[in-house]
View 1 (tube, rainbow, N blue to C red):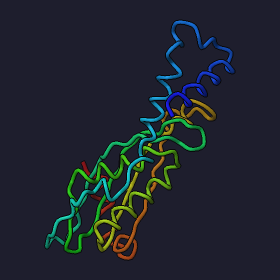
View 2 (cartoon, rainbow, N blue to C red; view 1 turned 180 degrees about the horizontal axis):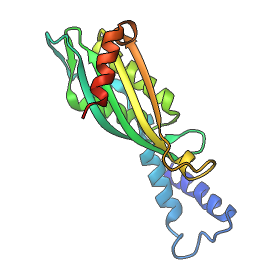
View 3 (tube, one colour; view 1 turned 30 degrees about the vertical axis):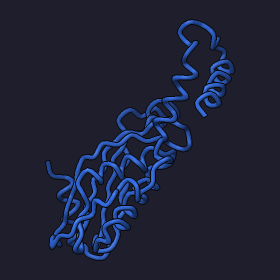
View 4 (cartoon, rainbow, N blue to C red; view 1 turned 120 degrees about the horizontal axis):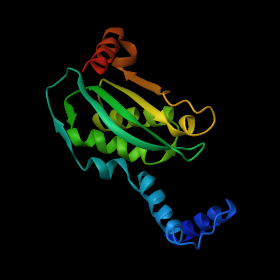
Length: 185
């Protein structure tokens, strides 16, 4: 797989008018191939393997919030990165998820080519599926290099997306509590 990707990168470099055999670019196709494989390794992961049984019985039924989970993803439209942070809250129903698993879920879905809106939904649905919570809320704030480096070239733009499921969708006060907590330092 790496060799096949490297050959494609070599062709791209050549098509751009560069010499892929010059000293600075000689190993670039292979490095770029390995980088792309790393940046998209979420395709090789499964939710079940990732969670690995880290669901624990608990009588906690109040909101649990994990804030500022950094994320790096690839825009499926331009294959350029978007970088940001994710906030996840859920209302447990007798089961809680191990804390590190939230970051692992974010990473698994972020390391795929997609749009931010889809990423937000995938994370929310995954947390709901594994916890069977009364509700899940996810907000992602990100800066997209496809807007910053090309096209409109707006350096200070960012995008916020949210998905509210269950209690967060149905109960305005629960939703408002989550949004207030996300905004607080």
